[in-house]
Image (cartoon, rainbow, N blue to C red):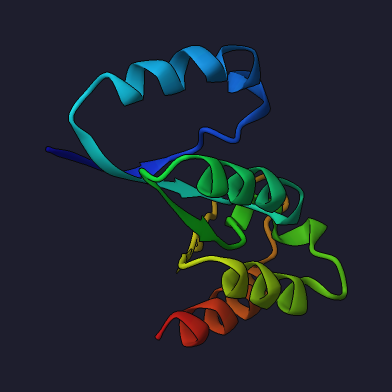
Length: 118
């Protein structure tokens, strides 16, 4: 059996091909796959995939690329998604390669999510 620890099947660029991708996944010995949510706008799609496919382990978090887009309720929203299904916290981290990156905002988001995950 195979385990995919990191993918983004919720990505809009994959949506036209999602049915074909999921059929291919179902035909392979894939026990579980983690779909990493990167921001609030894609968490609903990650949740929907988890509710539809038993192989999916959802992971909800804020990737550093999207930290600047956080809503004022992002923490409550994250907790809400984590409470809906067995899931993980992620994708989180730091990225200095983003043009105009905000180290303080990335640090705040990272530490809050890291503590939650711990």
